[in-house]
Image (cartoon, rainbow, N blue to C red; front, side, top):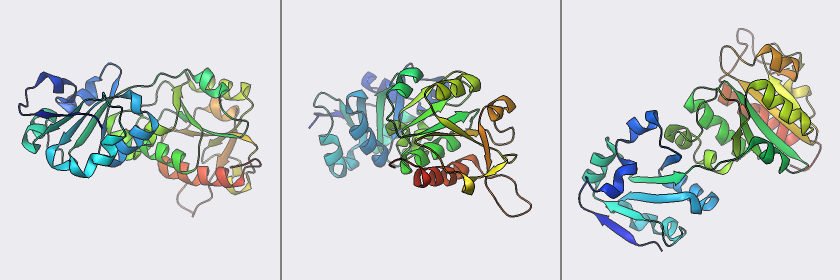
Length: 270
């Protein structure tokens, strides 16, 4: 069990990483991320305990969180502060009373792809700039057993605090890497033997008719512009049948439908 370090002064320099959390969300944290809430911390402790730099907890949450904290490495600093002091440090009322600072994993896209199993399901994201959508997609990726997520250079940060929260911690458990632009991402998948299924209202194939092979990647673009034409041309363009008057869904919702289909219809083991 890590030692609990009591904090009486909101100006304590040991809490610098937690100060003005919302402003730091926008400015960046130099290789760190912030996780918020019990469920997210639980997942982080299981997936990457050695990456957790410290934890800040409201004193009244300590007893209920004891089992989670006990799973941390013994030298992980755990700071306990009164709710008023904690709110002052983070800059807003932090009702969950649980924050952690972690060190970002660094992954090379080519190495990550090379390490995937023979039967693999990958998510490819192009131009997803909304953190709620990124978080929702990661949550679906975890729910349906995706082995990895590849992002192009224009996607927003999966380790933005809100994205982690919306993903319910899945952004910390599903491996991901940046893969350059959309075509670089597709070339990497092609070279590794993946069939790329690209979602688009203009797709010539209905999702229900897709019988994926052992290695399949589902590609999703931003709402509105969708995937670039060049990416669609290199992929199997697929649409989801829906009632008249609508031709698209929220991209996170779409990912859930598509990943469920691919996970349950793959030729190899799921």
